[in-house]
Structure formats: structure tokens, C-alpha cells
Image (tube, rainbow, N blue to C red; front, top):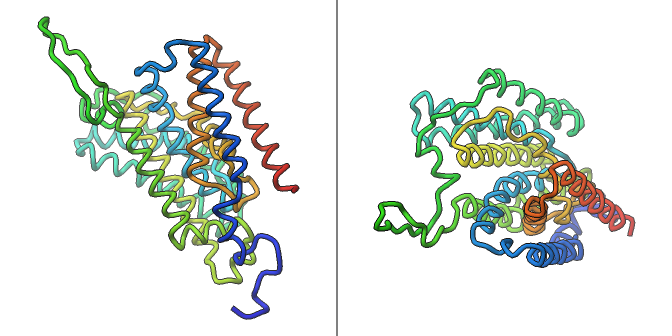
Length: 344
């Protein structure tokens, strides 16, 4: 690279490799401390918080938020935003259910759901990169279109009677031990590890490896840190952004499969406001809305903060409306901390 093409100062590609491991480390540590305080606080408030069943409930609730949050983190690192993930989740789930109803094997149908999500993400990416429409507006339009299409395809009615195989992903568990009692009724000895939790772990590990060990991950950080400097350094910025939006859409489709499988019913109205939870998990975990900063590990901490906060407030009998106020305040606080960090 010639001297003329070298970035001057700031957060250009010359420095983003050194910034990736350290950026937001204090933020992630504070988020982890917050998570531990929440666990201790809710455990003292309720003896059943540490029960096995409640732990499984938290894992199941967090799995969907976590999958959406990982995709959202990739988009936020590039300096964008994706407001469509909740609606894409519903459309993908409906597409999967309709395929199952048409006789397609469950595995292939769920693959179709992921493809539908990826296609929606690709449209978002192309509108942002080629039409030069701001991500907020582009993904807001997709949010409305995907939700409208899901409602139109189903007549706003749920798709039910999808069979036992359809519910296996959302309700199955690894190493589950069930014993048949003398009265003929089964007794769960060990509930096992839920499949959605295992899926989230695998996706998180893969995404973390991609962001920190592969070239496309370095390009994602470079694009969000300094787009013009990244372009001058040979990074194909438009293709990088497109990749981030496709991954966000694909993970929304995967989350749709998990959620609809848990319900064993495809609900076209599911996923409302999930995009805000996804943004919250990323921001609480240290992702910067200015771009260039964010990690999968931080997003996982943020997902568990949201999941445990909702679970603990539910156990305390706090209404859903108050929960929204609390989570909204948490998000504002996280963004404020991010702004203070950027000013320094």
C-alpha cells in the first residue's frame, strides 16, 4: 500500500486489528458484573430462581434473543442497523410451516426458512449498498413488508398441526433421561440440555471465529471503523456490508425455526419488538452504534442479561408493561455509556 493510501489517524485498518480484542473490554466486564448482580439479586428474592426448570426456561428464552443478537452485532459493527429481524423471523417461520404442510421433510423445510431469512437480508444489504438508502429506512421498510407478507400468506391465522417432528428442535434436549413409573406415566430424571441452547452455543462459536480469525471478520471491523480508509486499503465495503445483512437475515430465519418449533405452531404475529431486544443485547454487550466495536461474547452476556431480567421480573410478578420500561431504561443506559466511551 502506497504512502498516499495509508489512513492518517483514528480507527483505520492500520489500527483496527489491535483494537478488536481490547475495544469495549471494560464495557463487557461491567456487563458481566451486572449479569452476576442480577443472578444474585433474583436468587435472593426467589428460592425457585435456581431451580432446574427455571434454568431451562432462561436458556430457551435466551436462545432466540441470542441468535438475533449475533446477527445484529455483525450489522452494528459495520455501522448499520437491522430493524427487520423480528418480522423476518415471523416470515421465515411461516415459510417453514407452509413447506411442512405441503409435505416437505422438516429438515429441508427449516433450511428453506433460513434461506428466506437470508434472502430478506440480501434485499436489505442491496438496498443499503446499491440504492444508498440509510440502513434505518431500508430495514424499516423490510420490517413492514416481511410482516405484511407473513400475515397475507396465512390470512393472519396460525398454522397448526405440524407434527411431532416439527417440535423436536424447539422442545428436544440432549442427554434427557426419562423413566417409566409403575403407574405407566413417564418421570423425567434429567431434563437434558435443550437443543436451542446447543444451537446457540454452536452459532456463537462459529460467529466469534469468523469475526476474529477470518478475513471477512477483519473486513467487517474495518468497514465499521473507517469505511473510506477500508475502501482505500482494498476492502470491498459493499460486499462486506451485504454479507453482514445476509447473516443477520439467515440467523433471524434460524431463530424463527426455533421459536415456531417451541410453539409447534407458526404464528405470523410472533417476533413483534424482537428487533429491539436484539439491538439491546448487542449494545449492552459492548457493541458501538458508531460501528467498529462489538464482540459475540459481549452479545451473549447482553442476551442473558435481557433473558434473566425478564425471567426474574416475571417471577416477581412485575407486569409486562413495567418490564418494557425497565429494559428501555437499561438500553438507554448502555447507549449512554457507549457515547461516553466514544467521547474519551
